Image 1: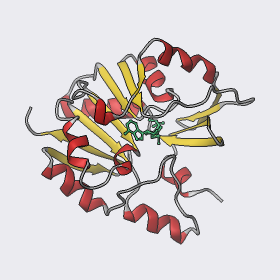
Image 2 (image 1 turned 90 degrees about the vertical axis):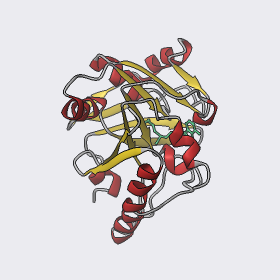
Image 3 (image 1 turned 90 degrees about the horizontal axis):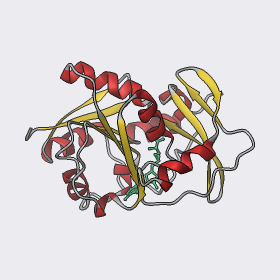
Image 4 (image 1 turned 180 degrees about the vertical axis):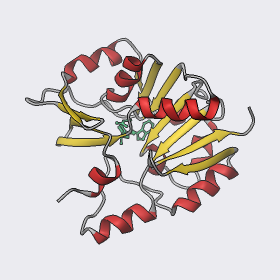
Length: 215
Ligand SMILES: C[S@@+](CC[C@H](N)C(=O)[O-])C[C@H]1O[C@@H](n2cnc3c(N)ncnc32)[C@H](O)[C@@H]1O
């Protein structure tokens, strides 16, 4: 049977090694986020920032797409030495040499630091996959303030609705960090709005799209 994340994020999945074993990451292809950007701004995005870049796969895909992509992660992942590293991208399976991703860290394109220690991010697209849920409610406004200078913030993360839907399939949702803020979809929209964004939930991308109001 397909797991909940497999159903929710069918467009991009990849294997990776964490400190305690091998896992699958579920994400959204940067090309689809770029397409969303195009429908909102009527031009192609030139830059991309992955907040919580993990092993660097999203930054690499955004570079491959033609964007100037950068990222940060609070955690340094172990060297990727799997025997069969793979990626399922837009329905097709690929073998991916993860080792090449190390260059992104060696060159400084991806830095090891917390978003809380970053200057406000400047980028056409900023992407947070899971990252926002790792903060408590009190800290979230500070985190969101880091994205006031981006043109479009794309955030995917578990909501109360996800947790309940997974429960109905007999699953307990797990993420790479312990989430601190699991709230209903509407709460997230209100929180983005309260913190200076116009937000919607895109049901195709399964992504919150938040556009800073001050621009
Ligand atoms: C679900 S992974 C996303 C990986 C990748 N962006 C993708 O979509 O495939 C979330 C990442 O956020 C990182 N993270 C958690 N707290 C963070 C923080 N305060 N600052 C930066 N990254 C953080 C975690 O270490 C983890 O690698």
